[in-house]
Amino acid sequence: MGKRIYLSSPHMSEEGFERKYVEEAFDTNWIAPLGENVNKFEEELAEKVGIKSAAALSSGTAAIHLALIAAGVGEGDKVFCSTLTFSASANPIIYQNAAPVFIDSNYETWNMCPDALEEAFKKYPEVKAVIVVHLYGLSADMDRIVELCNKYNAVLIEDAAESLGTYYKGKHSGTFGDYGIFSFNGNKIITTSGGGMLISNHEEKVAKIRFWATQSRDQARHFQHSELGFNYRMSNVVAGIGRGQLKVLNQRVGKKKYIYEFYKRELEGLEGVTFMPVNDWDEPNYWLSAMTLTGEVRPIDIFEALEVENIESRPVWKPMHMQPYFEKYDFVGNDVSEKLFVNGVCLPSDTKMTNSDLAKIVEIIKRLWCKQ
Ligand SMILES: *Cc1c(COP(=O)(O)O)cnc(C)c1O
Image 1 (tube, helix red, strand yellow):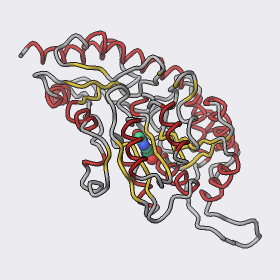
Image 2 (cartoon, protein in one colour; image 1 turned 90 degrees about the horizontal axis):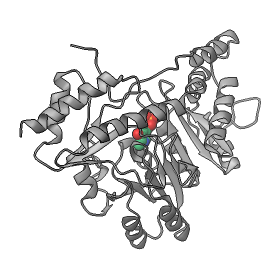
Image 3 (cartoon, protein in one colour; image 1 turned 30 degrees about the vertical axis):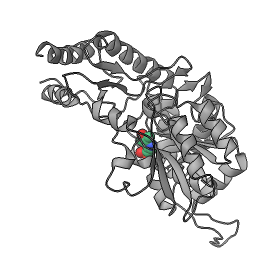
């Protein structure tokens, strides 16, 4: 059997950029904490996405947590959150003893449905913050979402963990809200092994977030703390990997797009297949290629057929309002996200795949339709 093909695995640059920055950290003994790589990674990422300020953190989850704190979310507050997402979008709401209200998707974007969001605002006009997710690198419908958040005075946090390299109407994903967050976890479009970034145009808030992330140490010779602190900063070694990876982001997006278009061309004609929507205002990073199946062939048939050949594929995220841990919280919407989950398939989207890997995957999948 051939070597395993992954959904999305780490892909370091051929040029060895990451190694060079990590070696610099070793050579100068700036292993930890902070240092040149952290500062430069923040600057380089901020410039890349077009934002004033960025804070490098230990994970995307930590970034969401600190964004909620910056938004003033605390005990008893309500926070709207996309339901079709990874649990890391919602967990920090619970860390703050606040209550999520989950918002359904629409078929046009697979992301937060603005109509459901509006309905939720009418029900809970006092809501503090909204966490909108850009699933698989597809943009949510930001014009309407921003407008609603402004109207109801809610802080907008963009969970752009999956959408680094995505543009909505020419502007980078994560820069529309008050705060945006990225993740550099192992399977993301670029990775530092683990890590995250918070971005914002509120520079003083980002400075505050760096302060909270380093245990809230006041300016004093002794250890003095007037606020609750966290150990959420990124290390200088990890930031070196990030700087190198940032140089190949465009290349990775190019390959992810190629993979999506390959699958779409080959599979779209099959009975019941619908690919994830790419709107004309959206330039996604195509982090994962996903499709839904509404015919005879079911997602499980694809998962099993690929697994036999040592190829990884996966269902679409199971919505948060259907999760045992979160089902007691309110949900606004219909059954769109549930249908996307039940019918969804994430295809292998690893940027190291060759054309023959792709041809093989497509052939295995097509065979399932011949059996019908
Ligand atoms: C990966 C991911 C996160 C969490 O990022 P970590 O860096 O793993 O903490 C949050 N939200 C979404 C949508 C993600 O895919």
